[in-house]
Amino acid sequence: MTRDPKADAALCLHRFGLGPRAGSIAAIASDPRGALIAEIDRPDAGRINDPALLTSAQCARAAFKFQQEQRAARMAERAARNPNPADARNGAAPAEMKPADQAGQPVPARNPGPGVPQRLYLDEARARIHAGLESRIGFAERLVWFWSNHFCVSADKGNVRPVCGAYEREAIRGHVVGRFADMLLAAESHPAMLIYLDNARSIGPGSIAGMRQKRGLNENLAREILELHTLGVRTVYTQEDVTSFARVITGWTVAPPRQDPERAGEFQFNPRMHEPGAHTVIGRSYPDGGAEQGRAVLAALARHPATAKHIATKLARHFIADDPPPALVQRLAKRFLDTDGNLKELAKALVAAPEAWEPGRTKLKRPGEWIIGALRAADIAPPDIAPVMQAHNLLGEPLWRPSAPKGFADESTPWLDGISQRLDISNQLARRMRANSDPREIFEETIGPIASTETRASITRAESRPQALALLFMSPEFQRR
Image (cartoon, rainbow, N blue to C red):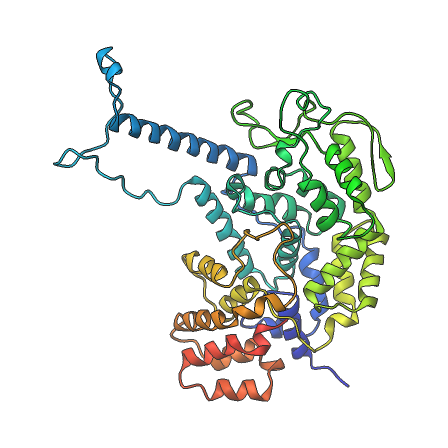
């Protein structure tokens, strides 16, 4: 049976990209696979090149400075409210007073808006949202989102908020079409990850610091690397391996602002915190070599067959099906091993797989994909990202804020409860439709080639243009990849 090129193009844009825009189905209809590969072959694939965005270390220093200024302001305010009589008797100058009203009471300070950590978070969110809206197909961006969720951190942990966007740019975007081993090292040694999973404070019991302090070993990062980031749950490792690996990566910490203001917020290996000696992880002994010991373990984990299978399964589940075809997983795992974890080649193998082009679309798009897809379809470029962020929150996928280290779910079932909220957001978006926009044209440019007779009829019978657009956003063809 001859396949419809436009149907394949529409499937491509919904399954592998961030949804069609005007003209995009026609633009890639002659070779959808080639269009996907061309996007990840670009030298800047997945990157955000914005000189206004700070590095993670710069973000950390800016946030620390802000926090210190806030602390000083609070102390000054308390001193102004409760001046120390002893200071007055000794001739000390009073603390600077805030303006007072006619009753002599301090005037409440005006709301200065979000503080530095929140502004940094929002600046990065804005850059990410615009990258999704502006991408030609969105395949590279989808890969970034996949890997960022795989190696997730959470802005809900205080000191992570100002650096979570920079973490994605530095650890994920810089390696999204590179080697898995490089991304693994970049993610696990990044200050955001070290803070999020408490390794920055992990101390080897036998280290110099360990013999002098009450704080000790923390296994969180070691466990999640083995369980979530590489080998997979309940595979080839034991609890003994977790503990041993946790000892290996003691000393992987973050330069503190008070002690090292010039390098504050950067990765630092502190030998005083590192558990000395050789350690065995997954049956292999690693000699003591400081930070190199941890790097050697990560390099071995990146090449382990269990890691290949785990990554292949997750990639196929994300793009193809909740229960990915075993044959596809096996081929992807083999490609991972054969190319030494080359992520571009892995993505190309996914695109080349016949299973990736089966017309049955059963997976519900995650909220972020659906929101960006709707904005792209209606050609809405929001001047303010606040409503976009609120939509993420309402649908249960707040940006860079997963509730656990395993990240947001990639199966469809956990997202079904949010369908009614998607209707509310669809209606809001439809009301912002351009005055000269025609929902029938948007329909043809986004889901027309794959729409059922029922979907086409319901949109045709809509009582208004906003209702037609809302029905389009809520259609099974638009909701699923």
